[in-house]
Length: 410
Image (tube, rainbow, N blue to C red; front, side, top):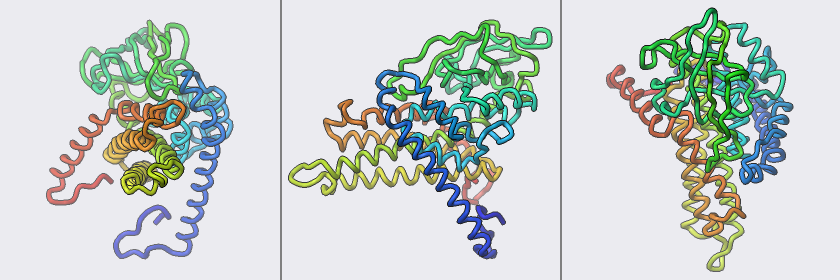
């Protein structure tokens, strides 16, 4: 029994060795969290509001994140990455979400782009493209969403057509994080005329001739992140740049998103925690009716609800991550975590603005940025509504298959 595996009924609840291993793991996690928090506090926070205001690209932050070996969390050591487990990754991503959700999104997006390669890429593709990420502060982008295929991924129209020993890719992707700066793209394209998910395949497409970046999107939230559309005009890629099996790209995209939604939930949790902390400080300092806000019961109840939401979002996120680390399915757990953390980040940041009152609407105070940054979490990597559909289908299927047994997301 490992130190992180709960005992089975009738088994002892641990030995001195188990407790020693558990304590060592906690120390390592605490040190990792402290490293990430120090980075967020000293590198991200001082420039976050400037980059939000200007919509400028935080290259210096990216470079330093990579230099400190915090970037590319799940990338194995053999490719130059830190080789973090998913629970460890969530510790880092909560802290960078606390620092700035927009910058945090850009710092973490390599994880989504690399995931199809980690799951199904050939050794040659991994050696070439994953080593590029590990060897420099390079960026990669995940190209799935299209103007006519957002939540309905199976409706995508980008095509990959055989030409000789290779492929030619045509189509347009939109709302692609880090696309303006990516060295390569993980692109999902239709390789057969058949509609629906069965005709979709996944490719690695390096930035080069025929790849057109169509300009940065001017978004209301997470403005410190880069998002843009990309067109692929007769882009030729070698035959060995197919990731996994032809026609299995849809399943590969879903498997990748199951894992990375947990990281999104961690970012959203960190953002909500930041809003709670700003609200707590303001409530302690602001005086109304002769006493600090924090002494008014109505404000205390609001703060208590905010704190509970942040706490539960963190627990749901870590549960989903631990399932992945144990090699178990986390489809339901990741939807729970992503949906809940995204929703409460919107609620908690809105409540923080409410506690600040009129000042909460002013750009002279920090919380209006947090409220704007929270909204994208309810949209990207599966909207809140899509997550509810996934949850409903999963629990209904489990109930029908288990009779009267309780539904479990493990």
